[in-house]
Image (cartoon, rainbow, N blue to C red):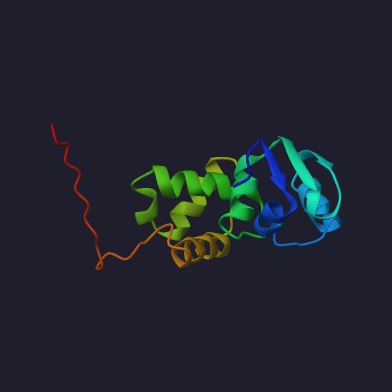
Length: 140
């Protein structure tokens, strides 16, 4: 995840998946990142000054989601999936209704797609038979 700090060209190249300066500049501009670059060649440095949409940037760089996705819908959907215990148990038709009432309508196909994607990258598991239990103990 990008932070407000200085990066070498190689560091940003690894995060953004492009090797040349022009490609890095274009991706940062497309993501709305404010930056200043100094130096040339191997001495090229980038200073990230502002990250306006951290959720979008996280989704693109960490989750591998396309930059063309509707991040407002994805944000609201993720909120319900991760923060509402009952939402994940609902039928997709009910999920669609809740999203519409929230002012961010999503098609059932999109909901299914996002559920499958989140399961594939191991962010959620809606499998009711393969359970893992965790216990936390506090030693004194």
